[in-house]
Image (tube, rainbow, N blue to C red):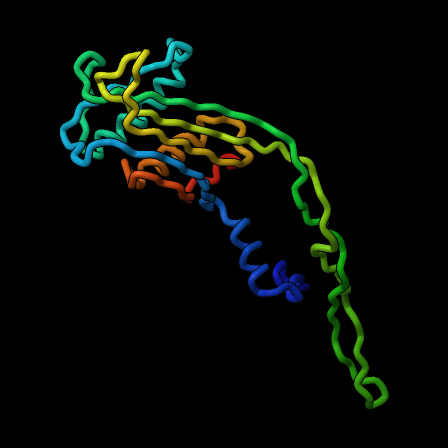
Length: 222
């Protein structure tokens, strides 16, 4: 009998490798984050203190506390130190949102594309005669269609203001927006990857606009 992969001998080698990759357990996916930022922070941030502050609507939010811990870890790794709000050099504010929409995505349609068979050769009246012993259908992509899928757009914003700022006269030193799209239904699943993407280059040049792609474990849809 033919093996599983011998039934797909007609497929191009590259397609076979791609299909095999999808079958491997624990295979890592990636998150592509679109980043835009404007930076007016001082060049020397070492030993500067910071405090992750809340907007009024974020009071009492455990989700905020989770993201604040992620941001604090990144800032500490950059040489800054946490401090109470009234003693910090910099106040850090976060914005995050989650939107859903339904769109049609290209979807391969699978079906029979032919048959593969085998047999044996016997000698009849002194002449070789091929006798088929089996015939099995071969399946593959027969066409492309479209299927509805829920696409999620995730966004994260980071603002840094000087301690001299007031509500009437804010002195903003840094403003960044990070967004990504995918099929993960929960913002918390992808936020750690998006925050890491922002801090791959931080604070960065005066104006930053780029895409950063980072690994994301394929435990759930991205």
